[in-house]
Length: 85
Image (cartoon, rainbow, N blue to C red):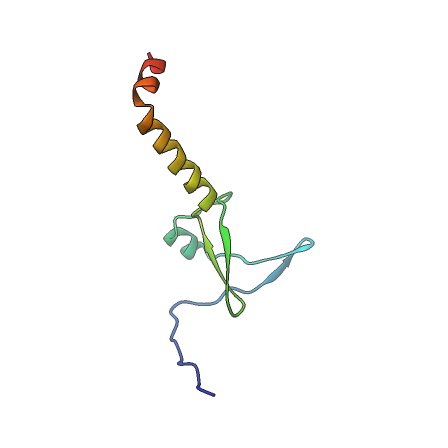
């Protein structure tokens, strides 16, 4: 069996804690500032293989909706222009 290469990681770790009846992690203030996150922001969870996950502010459902809206605005530009008057 081959050994996985060691990857040096910068920074620190986040510890899972009990918060009420749930589990959560607390982001250090410096990390939240670097990521431009504020209280109330939503992060979408994408599960990765090997017990990993990716947290991202990117919402694939919202992005798909915006793509549909942009196509509609482009296709019916004259109609929307008239409606805006």
